[in-house]
Image 1 (cartoon, one colour):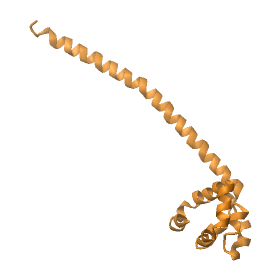
Image 2 (tube, one colour; image 1 turned 60 degrees about the vertical axis):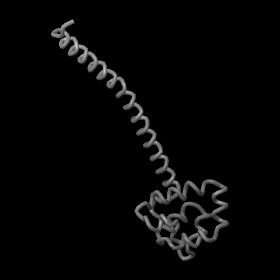
Image 3 (cartoon, one colour; image 1 turned 90 degrees about the vertical axis):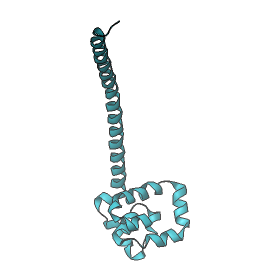
Image 4 (cartoon, helix red, strand yellow; image 1 turned 180 degrees about the vertical axis):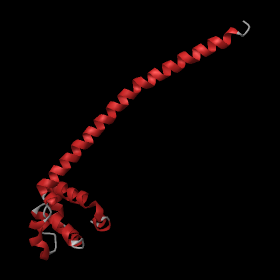
Length: 136
């Protein structure tokens, strides 16, 4: 919560974290029991509180009472379903990038072997040429 307070430009990621955590029953129970966390959430900017509260009814109980109505008016991309879709998109993009990185690394290995082979052949040729003038 302190991070959210100091780094508001990470807003969408902060909302995603709350969305993901609240889906874990033990975390939701721990959240409900910790009233100090509720007070900390109420120190956040009002629209961030509303976006967090929109993620789940348990979180909604934590925001400032005056903001309860604004939970229904959050931006489209901050609604729980959209947040989950955004997380899934990011997960898929990361998986594609990892696959691409692995593929690129696999392609680079044969090229490195070929380069090494060519350098070895070149060095053998140079050694053979220089050995011509050397007395035996």
